[in-house]
Amino acid sequence: MDVSKVRRIISEMKQKKLDFPYKGLIEDATPRITATDAQIEKAEKETGVKYPETYKTFLKEYSNGEIVLLGIEPMISQGLEESECYCNERNSARILHSEPEKGSYIFPEKRYISPEKMIAFTYYDGYQQSNSHWAFICDKEYPDNDYPVGYVSDNTENVICVLKNFETWLDVFWQGNKNGRGMYSNVIMLLYPEYEDRMELVDDLISPEAYPFYEKLRKKYDCNFKKYGLD
Image (cartoon, rainbow, N blue to C red; front, side, top):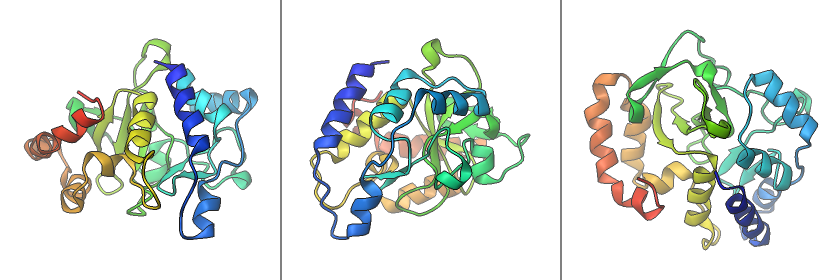
């Protein structure tokens, strides 16, 4: 975990000029509010999860949700009342309206997890406009609460991509977009850029039996993972 790296990214993001052709997009991508310690503590109590310092730094120093990062990654607010924010759903079970006892299969890790144990920090796919989202994987303890993060498919409710932690997710997002102008990509698009392959990932990884297909696509795009410093 590297809070200083997150602060560097935040500093660079604050300096980036937003150059969307539409005013509404600029408004959506401009930070409005930051989180207080009390709001974060309230959210942690509601979810039963202690957040990593990297994520709390982002909430307190860049934005407590109410923002679509570069118009493409919609961030969840923490500790606000439902009337104060776009999305008050903070775990995958509620975002997907799934039954808590139904398991989601984490393809990269070959195991199941309860959707209740995935705490969302984005709340829909900013490009496909689905409820696919990124979430902390919180079904066991990690040092310093530095949970892995997974991309949860709205269609299958399974996890089709896992990154080391929130810091890694933010770093990939910024590496892929900091030099862009006007058109940006969310993290899953940066890793799996071809639309048809990406849609097969979110639509067809229904059961563990589909693992060979997942592995095939993961190998196909290994160059992208390496490009962003991922194993």
